[in-house]
Image (cartoon, rainbow, N blue to C red; front, top):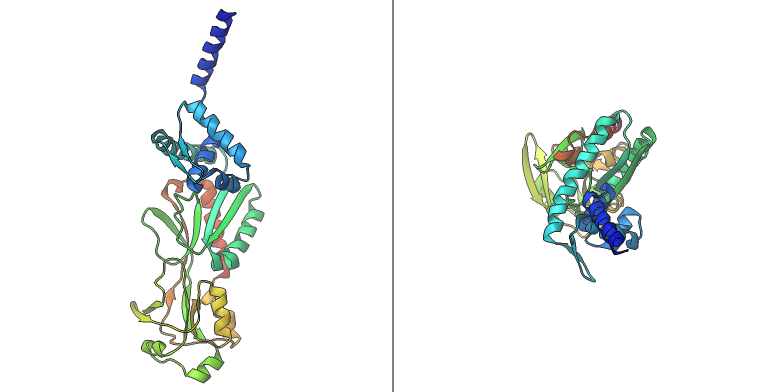
Length: 316
């Protein structure tokens, strides 16, 4: 009996030594790290916290080491956990590239795709595009998250960000989807009441409707004119972090607005808004931004090419 038990123990240890981590368990670990907790990771993955905890325990048993320090409020990586995190990122990237090479990932992409964008642009323009993308490629599982802040797409686990503006981080790849521009405009009744600004400095005497977006300086408009750039500090009684709210205030005659031509062109054509200081504007090009490690992803390339085609048809 003892001999049999010893043989059983030796067999179990041998099995443990030959076991390798499952890719999905590595993905769970990276999500726990990114979300800084089991409950948040479970919510992100659509799983139960108990199941997430179980997968982490299995991963730790498989690797024979503790990966996380757990407290009631947060989790943190052990030294071995940091090593496994680096390897997990590399392994999952390699699996994705293998999948792309073995499948016709460009023409028939499949699998997960995690996108992000800003609130206003994401809701009004990216979300409809994603709906059509899902129709074109039904085997894709697409998630779109919207934020009013700067997003670290690598550390937060995103494959692709749809971004307005030309400030592309150096460690990322940027593909311009479409050219766009912001213009200055106001409602006719506001201009009748307050007069039309004729110089950039005149804006300092006007009620300007300021939008606080992402990491842009609040109350400073940096505007392009004839190849150069000029700045003006503006203010007014109304401001918001939501562009749609500020646009409605402009339509109500509450002040001067700096807004994307995509959003205001129909209103300008209808006479509901009037463009002012037409020599001035601001670049608002739309970019697809993604990590350099995904440069060869056929799935991502198919998505970006689709978005370029889609936004080109909508360009003003």
